[in-house]
Amino acid sequence: MTGFWQDRGDGHFWVGELTLGPDAIERLTTARSLTLTQVRIPSDFYASLPGLIEVEIDGGSATDVVRVRQATQLKRLAILRATALADIDWLAELRALESLALFSLPKIEVMPSLAELTRLRFIQLGQMIRLYDLAGVAQAPALEELRFTQRLGVTAESMKPFVGHPTLARFGWSWDEGVPAARARAVLDALPLPRPDWEAGDVGAHVTFRDAD
Image 1 (spheres, rainbow, N blue to C red):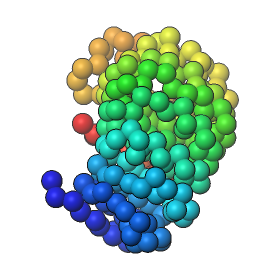
Image 2 (cartoon, one colour):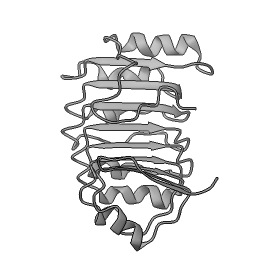
Image 3 (cartoon, helix red, strand yellow):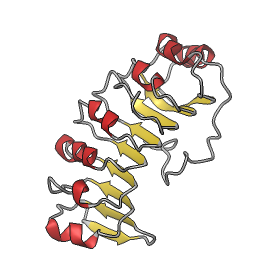
Image 4 (cartoon, rainbow, N blue to C red):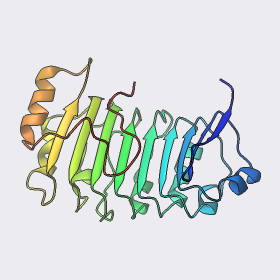
């Protein structure tokens, strides 16, 4: 695949298959929304872009993905297909987050505590086949909507921490194949809330992973 750089207007840039240097930071000084697909970045990349409020990372090394922790002002974050990423405890540092979506992080088994993310209202988790412990997600005090997509390692037991959550209003699981129907039904029954509007996006991000593969 040939590297590309697209300015989509209104401060949204999409960059793919490139290694970025200091000159890229200069080109992105107006960026508010950034989509990075298999991109290598400098160590101070996010710290140099204080205007960013939305980032989608698709692939890339664990080192490059983790650098997004510098962007403590982010409101919306999506991470897809970061197959080498084994530690996401640093998500708790992103205290301005309102929306978080994680897809295809196969090494993650336990979600970190999100108790300090007092603005977080939307979480979508998908294709995380080893993920079974969601107690940290249930600690997000303002969570309103929880979505599952495709295969997860969760069971009905995983949902117990969400029972009685003071703000959680919608929960659902969308899948095509590979999810045992009996287990999925047990998970849904364990947290009997109204289902999400799957045709709508999240609380503001331009991405949703319902159809990701």
